[in-house]
Structures are given as structure tokens and as C-alpha cells.
Length: 490
Ligand SMILES: Cc1cc2nc3c(=O)[nH]c(=O)nc-3n(C[C@H](O)[C@H](O)[C@H](O)COP(=O)(O)OP(=O)(O)OC[C@H]3O[C@@H](n4cnc5c(N)ncnc54)[C@H](O)[C@@H]3O)c2cc1C
View (cartoon, rainbow, N blue to C red):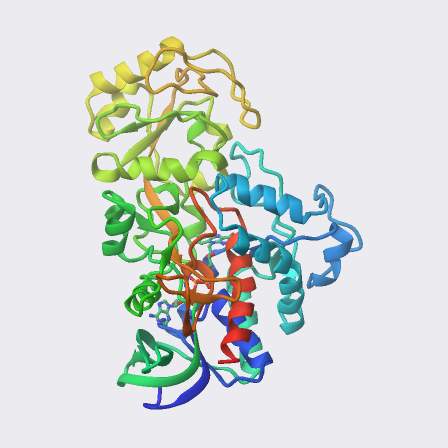
């Protein structure tokens, strides 16, 4: 419970990866630190527990990262190869997925500090392991090589647990079910206190510096509509229900500058039966990304996208968005008997609708048999004979239908036909606050707001259009560490 008028050198808002790195770093600098967590202890950490815990950092290959592992093997397990990951690799990957829009100053700090930050986390007690080789997504058409060297031991939940234990060992206080409401400034404009709400009421906590590390606005329906657009109100939230943009709003209220792609987010096609917000035990099994191996239709039975534009990793963010724009934000992925053996394993958790003919399938789905049959006939008239080769862009394309299918356009003609109902799931948002390389939050004139720092998903300018796998946790840790150290000096 927060004591009214209590004072800490540093107040950290949130108790996920970025926040706890900030807290530990502030403690390293000798500050008294309190961490405010809106969720109960069992749900601590926002989106962090939903991740696989992967960290993208520069390294020289397996030998170089061996000592970071909780149970290091002499050599990488069979089938796992780990080429060095250089600063140039990191730069090229982040620049290319964001089409060059990434903020270059922040990117350079992220890259340069990635490895030192991982080493520092390890010294604090975070153990790492090789990413699981038996990933649930095995079977998805895929070309992207594994450039994620290590994951936190026991993935996202393990990461939260290790960082929380480290925080306790270092004398950091974590207040659960304590929500940051707003920030107050003194006469000079410096953040002087944080107004919080807990079961006991509303309190002021006086502070030196404040680090906002309270995630994105993906779980806030009103902000999704406002910034992402129509259709997003119906998105399934893949992660925590607690990330409701509180930090964005509190910072904007004291003049912070919005930055990055506020209209952008990470999304995915997801099972229409997925829970409305994340449930740890099932979230990872919900994405439905084998659509390149079939066709996708809306509730009227019409195709609305090029299912084979590229590998699923290259298109699923866009596809999640396109589904949300359809009537009832609902679509059906339809496969035939040839495609079914190639679907990713997590379709095993889906409730498919099976039929021996397209007409029967349409009737069961409640759509016009004539329209769906017409869609399949038009597709088959241009599609190719043969089997699927999911791991290569096979170039078997349609020529005249709109929308086209650019790869894997194989005739849908081998019963049984199976349809899976899908909608769009939101993972996290891209837009946030503008920070400088010291993690200070900037105002509309690009001047630091005294005493205010930010790290993690709340920071804008890193991801645009797409995100880079395992760079989210990494930038949260890098800028969390910087934010904590600097907030301790206020
Ligand atoms: C399903 C899924 C898979 C993902 N996979 C990966 C991956 O493999 N690799 C990767 O790098 N990233 C991944 N991400 C993204 C990753 O989760 C984020 O990059 C990362 O968790 C962001 O960290 P953060 O510390 O900024 O925020 P979070 O970890 O979300 O923490 C925010 C914290 O703030 C708290 N909070 C919110 N509002 C308040 C308030 N008003 N007062 C007090 N506390 C508040 C929350 O309860 C939470 O503790 C994934 C996300 C999801 C949903």
C-alpha cells in the first residue's frame, strides 16, 4: 500500500522487463526505488510473460554466448547453428523491417548497448537458454533464419520472475495493484510526484525521477479506435489487459511529444474463439498463420487478399489488419486435404469446420453456397496442380483473378475441405513518447521534461510498419537501464 507523501528517489511505473531493468539500474546508482504495478502479483509484468523471452543482441557465435546460459552445453545441440550476429546485421534487419523509418539515434544506442545490457542482466541474476527448437510454429512457411541467440530461462514468465527476485535482493519495493493515475509538476516544470490509486484510495508519491515503463495502449479499445482506426475495436488482445496507454496519456498531459507510428501495431490472424485478452496458457496457441496454403474468404464468401504474397512472417501483421477491416472482423481460412498435413501444429487447438464439398462447407458456415463455390471455381480455374512446397516461394501464381495469389496457388480440389474462423489479434502498439538517447522524455519543442524518463513499449520511434522479433524486450532493457541510471541522478 502506498503511503501518502512517501518519497523515493526514483518511481518506476510498471513491473515488466523495461521497468525492472530501470529499477535495478537506479538501485545500482544508489537511489531508493519504488515500482508501481497496476496488476496483482500473479499477473505482474504486462506483456512480458506472454513472450518467449527472446533477446536480440550482437554476439560472436555460440562460444561467445555459452556462459550466459543456465545449462551451457559444450557445443550447440544438433540442428542448432549460431552464426555471429554483428552490429551491421542488427542495423540492416531493423532498418529493413521498418523501411528505414526507425529513429537512427535510438537504433545505434540499442545496437551498441544490446550485448553490454544482456551481460549486465546476467550479472543481476537473469539466466538465458537457447530458444526452444521445438517451436509451436514449426511447419509455418518460413525463411527467416534464427537470429535470436538466447531466450530468458523459462521464457517470459521466467524473465519476470528472475528480474523480480533480483529487485527484491536489491531492496527495491514493488507495490502491486497500485495504478499510476497522473504526473504532477512543480513550478519549474519538473515532475515532482506521481498520483496513484490502490485499494486504500488515491495518494501522492513524491519523487526525484520517474520512469514510465507501463507498456502500450493495445488493451484500450477507445485508444485503438482513435489511433489505429475502425475495426480495431474488435481486435483480440493477445497480451495483458493492463496495458491501456496510461503512461501515454499521463505523459501527453504534461506536454510530452507523441512520436513514432501511432497508427501502427503488431497484429496477427488469430482464432476467432481466442479470449478477448491474453490468457497465458493459451495465447501462444491462438495465431493462425498457415493461410498461404489455402484461400481466405470473408463472411460473404469472397476472397479479399493475396494469401500467397510471401511467407507468413512477412505478411501476417498486414493480414491481421485486413481481417479486422472485413464485415464482422471475421474471415475463414479454407484448406483442402493436400494442405492439411502442412498446417502449423497450433491448428490442433482450433475448432475447424469440415465438409466433403464446398457447397456443404458453405451451408455449415452459413454463407451462400453459390458465392463460395464461385470463389473456389474462379480460383481453381487459374490455380495449379501439384503439392505444396511450404518452405519455398514456389512462384505458382494466379494471373487474372483479383486479388491474385502470388505463390502456392494450388487447386483447392481434394476433400475434405476444412474452414477455420479467424479474426485479428493485436500484440502491441508502435506509437509512443519521444525520448532522447538518455531516455529523457521530450516535450513538443524537443526539450527534456525534467525528471521524466521512459523505456519499453511506451517509447515511439523504434518500430514502424513491422517489428523485429526479440528486439522489443531488448530495447526495453537497453533504455530501461539507461533511464534508471539517469533518473537516479535527478
Ligand atoms: C503474445 C506476445 C508475444 C510477444 N513476443 C515477443 C518476443 O518474442 N520478443 C520480444 O522482444 N517481444 C515480444 N512481445 C512484445 C513484448 O511483450 C514487449 O516488447 C515487452 O513486453 C514490452 O515490455 P515493457 O516492459 O515495455 O511492457 P510490459 O512488459 O507490457 O509491462 C508493462 C507494465 O506496466 C504495468 N502498467 C500498465 N499501466 C500501469 C499503470 N497505470 N500503473 C502501474 N502499472 C501499469 C503493466 O501491468 C505491466 O506490468 C510479445 C508480446 C505479446 C503480447
